[in-house]
Image 1 (tube, helix red, strand yellow):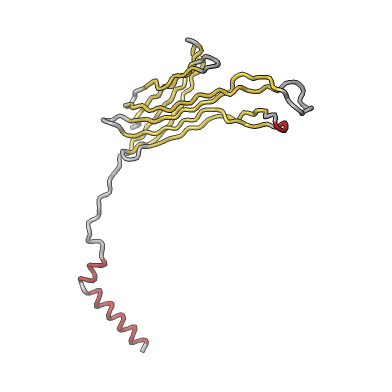
Image 2: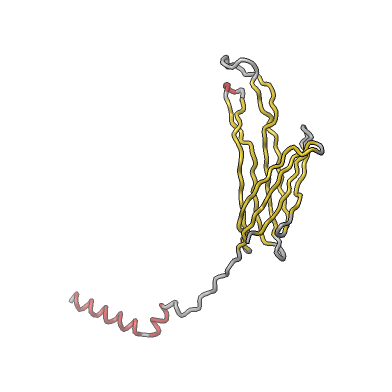
Length: 192
């Protein structure tokens, strides 16, 4: 009897599959497929130049380059991190703490009108400059004052719209203690 049930089931399956209405309901190949939207991706090179002046004299010039791909619908982003860890005496339990100093750049590019790109940038820079004498505390193995570094900081968030090869001075700030002026210039290149 089990063999007859299997044979009847197989026969019913063959009849159902031979019926064009049943087969058409299960088939999806006949339906038109939606065309996939091709999103144009543009490779970009973004150069950020941070220049520091003491009066009219250029003291430092630091170029940074980030590469990113920008698509028409989603834009593109890139991050750049470079720096060092600087030991700082905390005075608490005669311990040391390490502070990150260096440059952080976050960049986002989106397509704008007629071949131009809108860049959103965050440039954050910190550096060690000079030192201040600090008491060592209860550490007999260290005699005399411990030199504490001065950590200076500069941060800007900006938005600029540029075409291939264009530059823009995007930020300028004066350090209130040293009087030095920091300038940020951004240049965009479309890579072929």
